Image (cartoon, rainbow, N blue to C red; front, side, top):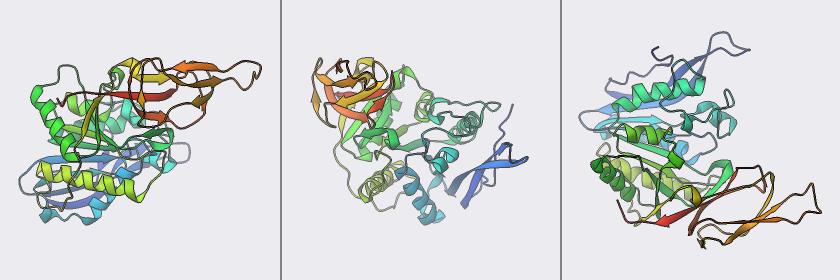
Length: 335
């Protein structure tokens, strides 16, 4: 089955086009409707095809704001090649301010390469995989911590099994140009169904980023995202003359296996005993799990299973069994 998605953008046409992807959708209140996903193509002359996406999760806002700004400001004569901008890749989730789609409850960043005959989220992933990523020479995916996570502003590079050495070097160059204090190498617990994981497996130089937290948006977080994105676009050559400011030297780290994650052992209320950026030792107390519906029970201690730096942690105190409480990173050499 070919894609169900159609668009008013001709990806092969020169010039600047701002339009949308449209996914046919027939819910209870609309016989022949579509789900629109804003998009733009800015194409001029010879050069790389660079794809930039935001709102893969709908509660992460810095990326969409910066991409929308590029859609408004960049003129076709500034481009060498093609700049494809997808500011709200998970548009239903962004409208709802949720991590996952309210339509089918799927996480767009766990369904690649998608399914043209599947749920709406799987269909949009299928279109992007086959009709957008198939053109790409570079991919930049802008994330943030969203409503669920406090996280250090950082770049992410995928550690795909058997990754080509040249691709690993290209990804490392993107991370260093992005120029934020931390770069994290991650295998996502072996789940490569993310957009960045899929693009990396296809041999596309790829960088993901986490540039905000807590579902907030601040001038600092948007500014840092803008500056880092512009540095990458200049580095790729698609916007060779765009103004940039220098980035920072990045610290290379890795999420080193399952023990780097801390999970809630049961449903309850978590009293954390750590802070973002803190140095952690294996066996250190992470916090206490309270069972407030059974107040006669003493709270149960939870301990870190490995050493490292506290890179990210959950926001809420009321947690369910298996919910992520914290993530550690360990320092590594540049790949």
